[in-house]
Amino acid sequence: MTGPGDPTVAAAPGAGPGGAGTGGTQGGAPLGTAPGSAPAGTAPAGEGGERPSLGDLIGNVTQDLSALVRQEVELAKAELTQSAKRAGRGSGMLAGAGVAGHFVLLFLSIALWWALSHPLGHSWSALVVAVIWGVIAAVLALRGRSELQRVKGAPRTAETVKKIPNALKGDEEANHE
Image (cartoon, rainbow, N blue to C red):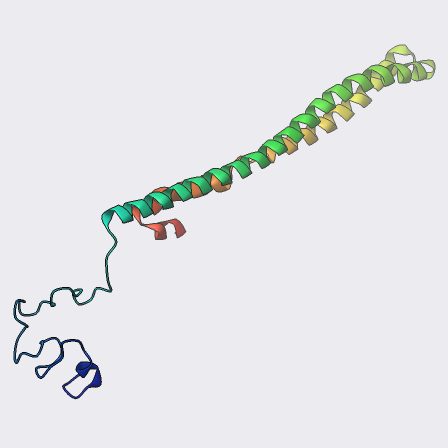
């Protein structure tokens, strides 16, 4: 508790015989002020200084929102770049499988067909060659398909974009639920 003998009361501005804030008058507020109000030029009790203006607050919100949007765009770019690289690799593998399958089937099939034609005959040797290269093409196609299935788009960007409405409402705690 504070009282007349407390050093903090004695050191308060305007402290006089009537105590802190009385401006030296006995039993009341200084002249020109209402009882219980702060003297002119001082901040009301409980406030720690100037409050920012509405323009400053809107400017801060605009800057924060701009930074958030820029960060979301950068995240989307990074995720889409990674997804595009994976899609490109998968597509390249499928295209390579098609081209390689065609040329290999064309040139080596002829050679193998002629090599097997003596013991098996021309018809059976052609069928054996076709089955061998069909298996190879299927393996390449399955590997390319599995690479394309690993492409996920931009999942982190989608997740953080869903949090923006709660952040704009000032309800960021809802994002952690």
